[in-house]
Length: 169
Ligand code: ADP
Image 1 (tube, rainbow, N blue to C red):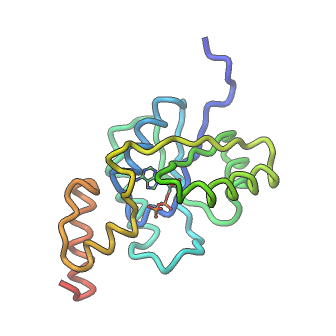
Image 2 (tube, protein in one colour):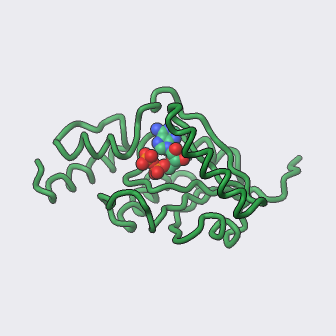
């Protein structure tokens, strides 16, 4: 019997690009919630993205096309406001090495202060993805390295194309 009335969760991030670490969290979270919204941040304080927001969304949509309860969307502004708009009560975050903890704790506490009705849930990375990040994948790809096993094949191809476009290969 389901006792939780609200089973919509949001998995936010920059996904520049989606990695196998993200995908592992997506697949596991999709089993826990009726509906999982992957929310691609379009106003990032991080460095200039390699992929445009549309490219990031399209890659996510393709790699999640076999997951019927997963939706890919983008958001601007406060994440808790977006969660409210989408009637989601849960934010899913992935945790890798200890280094993620401090930042994620700060974000979770800030989001709770902004809206106490939105809860942040942490999922531990699969051990094999503990050191995998979009940044490391980009660093490898842009100098012509092989990203197989780090990202889905479709993303690996897009990274090769991007490296060519940028004339670094
Ligand atoms: P990155 O840190 O790789 O640039 P994002 O900002 O897109 O990634 O991260 C979105 C979410 O995915 C965050 O909660 C982040 O902790 C989580 N995440 C990223 N990489 C992994 C991984 N390898 N394993 C588990 N969670 C991850």
